[in-house]
Length: 106
Image (cartoon, rainbow, N blue to C red; front, side, top):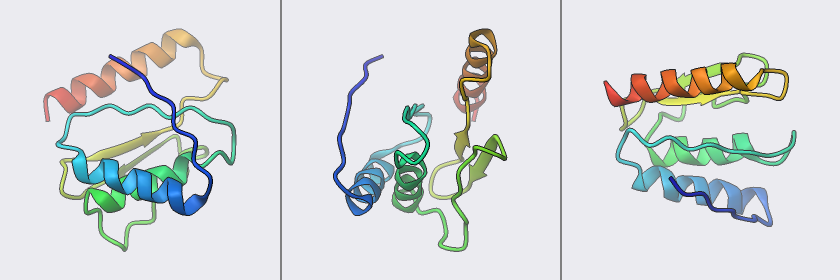
């Protein structure tokens, strides 16, 4: 599994990058976003959701307070999860394993 870093210069650019990725997604991908509060993670997820044909009526919001948000579109499901610094690493690993198991069996 590889990683890459992208620097966006605007919310529009972040949204468009997410939209492009959403159009390319085939289902089963796990994409982790790391960034400070206000870095644009939710903006990126909004773009991914749009690119994956999640309906305009879906309110793509930050999972900071809800912890888990799910959106239906062209793909079986888009899951947005907050795994913050307050969660111990063992729990983060367990959450990621459960997500992988769930998406692999979908």
